[in-house]
Length: 541
Image (cartoon, rainbow, N blue to C red; front, side, top):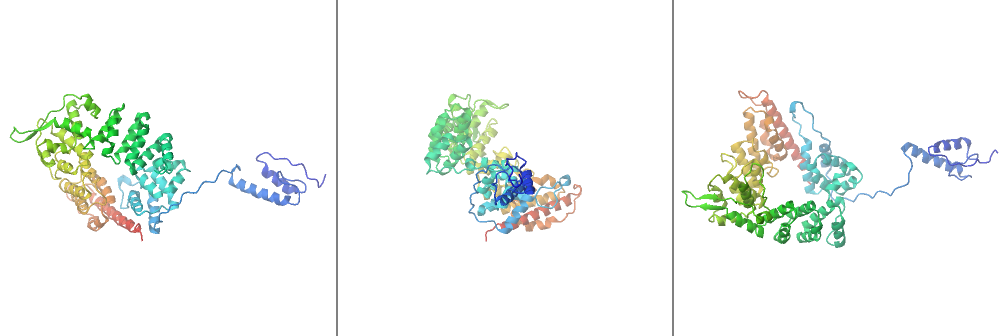
């Protein structure tokens, strides 16, 4: 009947828009859409429904039940970056290495290689990351594990907030203590106990590390509460956390771990105890090692004589000596090395006539035991962080074998250098380069403090200049050149200006080498100037 509203039916999903169009054509006096009450307000309700449906259709998705609103990210109270530094960060993150032909890099600096130093400086000044840069920062850290700690420190709490919303950035949660959640403090003993007993393994590791960092004894006591029930692989990881703040008070716990059913746990406990010179294990090792090494005064020159162990008894095994020797390694020399590198280095002055480390290392060693004995002393010097023994074993950098009387490889020399102060380390490496050039210096340069001290920087530039004058291709020195771009003091830039010109190529020089060298030095000069600019941009006003 005209003027009588038709019966209202709820349209099936997907037909809502068609229903609204039909009602608009017919008029609300003749038909009322579903969900709308007939009457004078029906036209307004129809338009409201059409507006909602229009938004829904444009969004391209079905309406759903409203979810809880996402909590906003925590505030970052650190000061904002200076505007110039923020623009520089955008440039560094946008840089992608070019695909040069034939390995030729040109004169353009590698901006991504400057990002780690930029981050370190920004973190040192305590700046907060710009919010708009966080996605690019997290993408960069996703592809480069070496910069993850610095990126997460700079990005702050907002990075963890974003990581919970994007699976590609979940690494940030794994890297953060407790998965990014706040760890309980000493004022929350119940929450701490609950997390330690019921938390995920990563959360427990993070908790133990955090407690160890502020109270070594509390961390050890926390570990002891569940030690007997932990899996062997977990005991090993937890025990490794005791390296932080290792002290004499840890000895009873570590002595107990020497009887652990896991060989790896026993070995780690023994290693930690051997780093405590006053421990009972160190004393036992000193007695064993001392009985194997003595000075023979009956020869024309006092000589060290060695009588290696003839067996690995149960006591030695309990104290961490591995009985089975590696392939192509004699058992007795294997056992001797383990005893010597676990004995306190102070043992040898008392055992060998009050001699200094330099005097002991200079003594001849009978029966070809010299390399084995000196290599064990090298390991002991690194483990016990003893600079006097490191100096003795390194010797002077000018010795013909370029290593000194105990350093058997570049890797060992680098480890010994790491026990010295930054200035002494740089001076030794500078002397090494002056005598032996750059061909073997890469690993040694890697342990030197950045920026390189003046003598070391000058030694590197001089050695590169010598290589250029010899007509060699610079590709042979690309690793050192890359280190120089990151580590050379920007103040050295003035010395490089003269080296950017194409030199006269000597006879028998590699064709075109001069042009490549000029290009490499130009890139080094440009990079140093850019690094100086970055430091200025990041200096707080």
